[in-house]
Every structure is written in C-alpha cells, then in structure tokens.
Length: 76
Image (tube, rainbow, N blue to C red):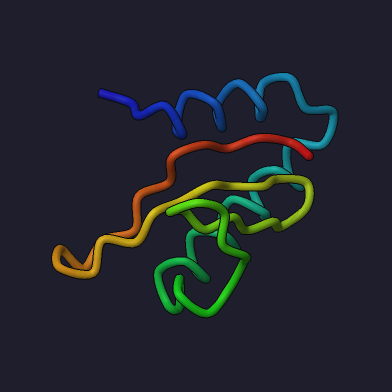
C-alpha cells in the first residue's frame, strides 16, 4: 500500500515536465533524511521541513524506531 507521500510524489512526477529533476530530488531527499534528518531542514510544529528543488517534504523523526516518516511531498 502506498503512503500519502508516495502518492503525492507519483502525482508530481506524472505531471512534471522534468521528471528527471523530480527523481533526482527525491533520491537526494531520501539520502539526506536517511543520514542526518535532525541536521537538515527547519522545524515546523512537530515536523521537519526540507526542500530539495523542485520538491519540498514535511517529515517526522521517530528516534525510538530509528525511522523518518515523510508526511507530505509538494512542489514549492
């Protein structure tokens, strides 16, 4: 089952005129959030927000589970 973030990313990719840029940004976001989610982006309420053009994500860090969950994906 796809998550809300995966569905949004798929929709953004399908509608994009530059799918390579969307794919590359998603890969960079995945890599940076895997390595240091607490050191990038900015805080917004209880989430982190990180932009890697042409995408921006809202995410939460679950340290007890060693997990980062992407809550939303959008184009700025």
